[in-house]
Length: 580
Image 1 (tube, one colour):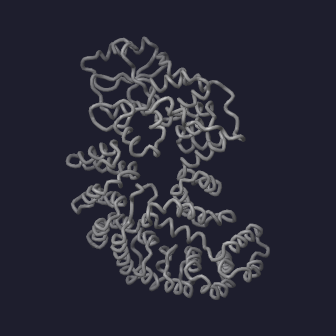
Image 2 (spheres, helix red, strand yellow):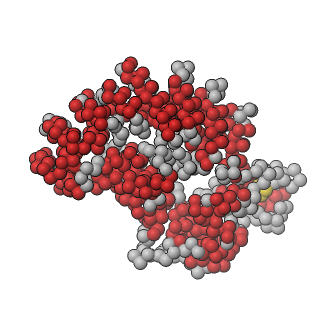
């Protein structure tokens, strides 16, 4: 597993180790590993075997379902064959079949490893399995799967299109961005059979697929259509036929509120003849794992622009489009596009968190960044960006609210201290207050940088630049600094944030909380507890967030020590407390 970071290898071995003795615990660990490690695990194709094991017929239902999720990271022909067998077996429990159905359709990269790639043979196997499912449900006249329609939104095949054409009203939820011309013609003449909640999406698909061929029927049907469908048809007519159709739109806008915005949208369509932007953007968003990795960033950037183009005039009627737009921004790795998304849909901040915080820092929007970082639970990232872009006191103030002692937080404190005129504090942070390393073995928690951090520095330094900067030392941290923009908001007008760093580095015990971690066989626990009280500190009964210090017993689980140090607790060193 050399292609996978050491901390994830450790967690995988640990999870599989529980499989023989505690299935529930093994499942919980594997589920968390899938959620946390999907950006890296797909780098090692051999790990598909873990998913095949989880998918086995003798496994519990939830283990099998999570196996389907695991296999999303490994879209090979073998994976497609196994999942096709699962969905085709009448004895498969419904939750497993549903998850397997989704995995067979899922062609997005999103946060998966960049090497994730659907091969043509895997696509063919998956498409055939999904089309077979759809064919059976079409014959029965009812859709018995919640996942199948949305899985089929990713499928671009004549098999699926032929199934949809047999019952367009039944499959309205599956129709989005892919259609063959024969299917689009069927949809055009049977649009009234499509349930109303799906018609706008289907109308866009028809226009994008047929082009000018669809004009006569779109125009003729627009007269009697409900207002939202009428406007969509008229905009499509302008997109496909040009200025000749402006008069019909003007008649429809008579007396409407926000008519000026709607006219502006018409101008956009005139300037982008033949483009149905939502459909074009979704065709990329639904297929990023099919296209070559080298093309993804450029195509995601265009797709992000497409999915945001019409939001200047009205909100998307379907909320999921903002999520797809967000992942295209992530794929493009563009902070400016993140800003556009959040301006149009503030609820999407969480999808583009890192890019959005970076954009705010680059533009010197201190107050906005601080609020966003706290809302998004990214105080460490926000503080680092503020330190980088020349607002050190605001960075230290934000850092004081962070919940976890991450490399980003430590790097932010070090750089901000230096830029605030306290290089002495920077040096002490780098010497005394480094973050904990990730767990890679049961024996003990290695000093930072541990094996995991060294792997990251050597293999993926761009993913976590704070790790590399801290490991390389003072000069590397300082090299992260950038000048503040000319129009940046002023820094905080107080030195209190520096005082907070001084207090932390001062390691004072009066008023602090202390946890006695682990077993005390040779060390005198009672004497240490008494010494804690005499020093003006108080004991706590667990490794709770906010604990200031801990005493390492004769033996303690490495997980407990890691938890304490991630929460910012510091180990009491020899000589700082009697009995330690």
